[in-house]
Length: 449
Image 1 (tube, rainbow, N blue to C red):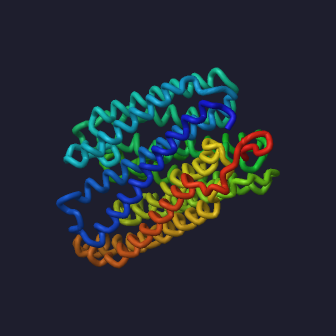
Image 2 (spheres, rainbow, N blue to C red):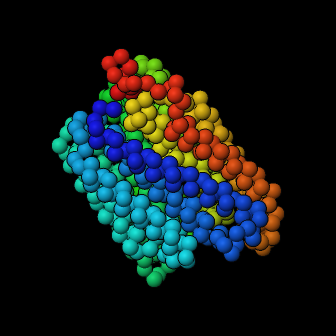
Image 3 (cartoon, rainbow, N blue to C red):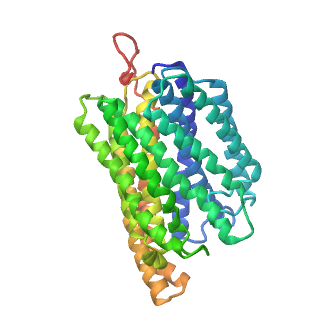
């Protein structure tokens, strides 16, 4: 660690890990309710558990992005963060907003819009936190060295924050409501977040492989161009059946097909950088997570997204377990695994120690990735059967759900595997054996500095 202000990232990472733990446990509870529908039905209804599961996912990923920015931007800009006080104020606002949102959900207060259920005061708090972040990061970058990584990261984070304004627009017309809703949800995860992912992945590969910066930057520009080209108009695949003009079926189908390209490029980029790399970096766990993130993102967001993005297929599969299969693997690969990669790389340095517990860390990767892959296959088969029984044959919804119970039991088993891997990851990152502690200094520099 070269700059003292990078220590801000440590507290963002800790907060993110705490919410990550809550998120996966909430997902496991939701998975069990599919098996046993009356479980906790009066104490903690399914809709509340699902809100906590999805909202915790969004917030901990954002905390990870913010922490990653506070960690890598000082190194890229070659200067301290503009204001560490503002960074801590931002973190406090986000945590208060998170606790306030969860408390509201538990007493039945929510906005009723999926992913955007937060009460109005929480939405304003998030907006204030985002503005603080943008000021802090922008001032740091403008005063220091400019690189492609900071430029792309800053563009992604600016667009991410500005798109949050659409969360406040909630028209009475249902078609308009869903259109503005997708402006946040889709343009986050399939456009601006991809820029953040590409920038963080580029930083990690630059540090872990030792490849020349010029090579990394050329790949980065191509990935960003294809992500924005496909992602913005690719929003149209959500407009098929919500009352918007029919031409969106063609626009959405065509540009959604191109959304596979940036994820394929990111996967290729990661492996080519490792192949060309000259550095044998000691942090093998961070490298595994980086390669795993780009690979699983290609299959989850790219391949599984393409499976049901064409409007002729989507007409039958929309809203089935196929959507759940795609969503779980895409989020896990593109963003969850990426955050865990930057955590694995940065946390040892933030704690001034060498990379530690790497065997446990890598074991957690295979547990989580294996569990998520099995869950994806299970939900894909369940969704295929559901599509045929419900949308083609015309069976009643609840009859179809009962027929899928065996798949839901397997999904719960896969979820238990993911939760076990997540807890193992947190343990491997926070608990250090005494013989693994080193005293950083000229004789024992912290690897990665």
